[in-house]
Length: 122
Image 1 (tube, one colour):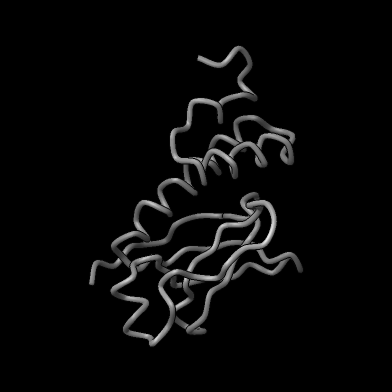
Image 2: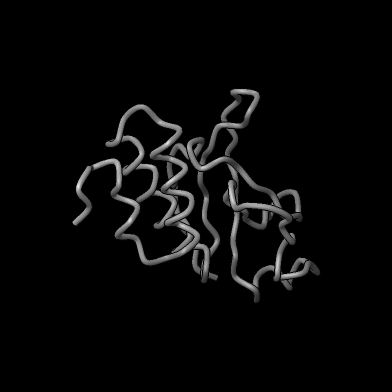
């Protein structure tokens, strides 16, 4: 168990969620909010590996953005897109997903996740 609640991310085994959770613990004033958003991102990632997810996040402009996204290679291929996603240069600071409406890869800052609306198994 971590010595401080703000170190909750140290017990997370998934490397991507661990990195994003560490960012959340640094960027958000409330440890509880950071933990909640971390759990939401982990759930989002888990659902996206096989399904389409309807979720909501806040854009950097402050506007709430509803999205239908996935990380499932079979679904992404149906849109004639590269399932390996965008290649990153530099550190991991955003959560990426394939946007089914825009038919391209998108990303958002982890602290901007609002909620998961629904999941759709294809």
